[in-house]
Image 1 (cartoon, one colour):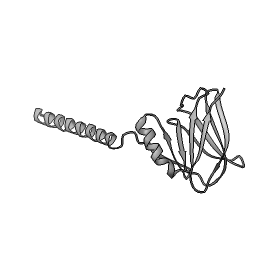
Image 2 (cartoon, one colour):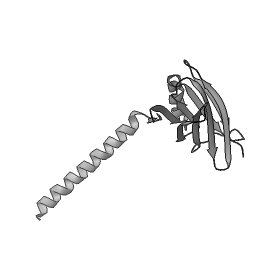
Image 3 (cartoon, one colour):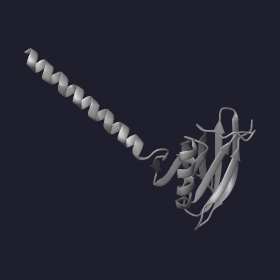
Length: 144
């Protein structure tokens, strides 16, 4: 290969790498602190609440969800990476996820549910009634 070809190829690779880096930076900068909305078996949810920006974003989003779960430890410290399962009143699991922060927002149909959370040896469970309008709020404090 000629030296001219190699120089041109290297220049194009460098330009491409700079473009990709700039694009990634621009995407990250466009939505600071905003958590990702996910969907599982038709159920829309979002999890997060780490950092002031993300907490503020989730507070704004909360009215769009029928259930807000806040997960904390026995001493009141906020927890993330907690396995949360929601079951119907009949005991059938309808939702399961690992949290990305202490706040979990879930869009469920109105009804009675049992919410369980576990992290290591600590766990908690509580019944909740999700209203047809508005948001049910549940604070779970995991205990060993």
